[in-house]
Amino acid sequence: MSRTTFKLISAIAVLTSSSAYAAEQVEQDYIAGGHYTATFHQHAGNWQYTPADGQDLNLSSADNCSVASEVPKGVWLLTSDANGDPELQAPSALNLPAGHSGSVQLVACDQAADGITQIVAPQLLLDLLVNSAGAVRIDD
Image (cartoon, rainbow, N blue to C red; front, side, top):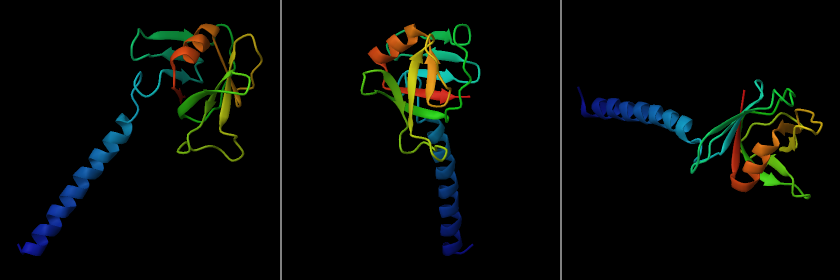
């Protein structure tokens, strides 16, 4: 085997292994409690609160306030609107459908929500998020 062929085979092996490593890293980039504090499983209506420094809490919106949501999946930044109410902002990397504003309001169960620009959540969860969260993961 020539030296050039050996170098080529070695380069391919390194690229293949680094591509597999990169794909593995993408799946590990976001860690519950470390990069986001809550997960909303929108089709089930379930919330999982996972603070880094406390006990996990599972809450169901389906019991009190069932509204099907169609919010794009991904990690959203928790901010507040002009009135100080909690809302989620899509980071630039999140793939949004055409015409989506990139923001979704979080509202208590006793408020009406449309499931596209608003997500309902139990008031307890909203209070916890406002006091401790920086990001929320939206899942199926």
